[in-house]
Image 1 (tube, helix red, strand yellow):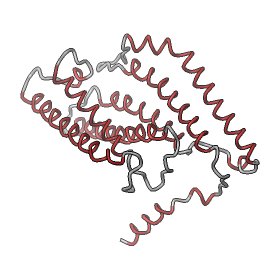
Image 2 (image 1 turned 180 degrees about the vertical axis):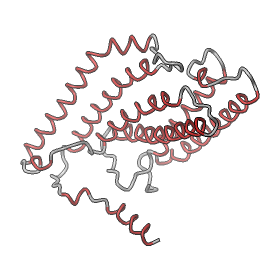
Image 3 (image 1 turned 60 degrees about the horizontal axis):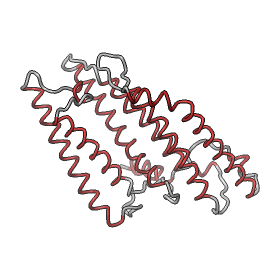
Image 4 (image 1 turned 120 degrees about the horizontal axis):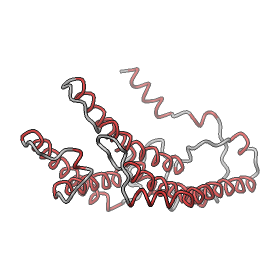
Length: 268
């Protein structure tokens, strides 16, 4: 990633300090929970972590973990990847922050599954929660990835026809595409709002041994994030409205930086 600030400016260092604070606090609480689990018979487990039940240490863990993910995402969103497009829309920063959340969640899934493999095959103590926790996290990864793809204009587009259009016709096509996304979003929210609210209010669970509230959280999240995708589509339309026409070719799909890294790896 490049070191220049994307949007934080002078706030980058305070955000970094907040990230380090919450990450350190999360690590301390996690170590305490692990030691407590080892030496105390009725210690808190992951089952209690998704059911706070007024326990201060659980709330502290949830708050610190939320702060760590939030400030880490804010800090990482201030760096631009080598193949990322520059943020130029009014909603781009929000999508960049959620994309960093998706990256952190992907790494978390890897850690969860690594823990499950070691626990199952080394200590013969498989968990009840690893697979469902991975599904829970992965659902947000997929949702945030769609928002990021919209921001980066990396979704599927048929450029063969689009590049043949005059500028005014391209604008018409962009408006029609945005309207279709808005109509789809409206229909999805209109048709599923009552069901999502009902699941969220009763915090509907998964119906398994661990029984996490996946339906009660993921169903409302789908509606919220699809609205964010629609807003990002509007932001793209406004940002691209006055841009000069672009022409695409197979050469555009070649990542020169990746090729250079492969050459260095082969040379080494």
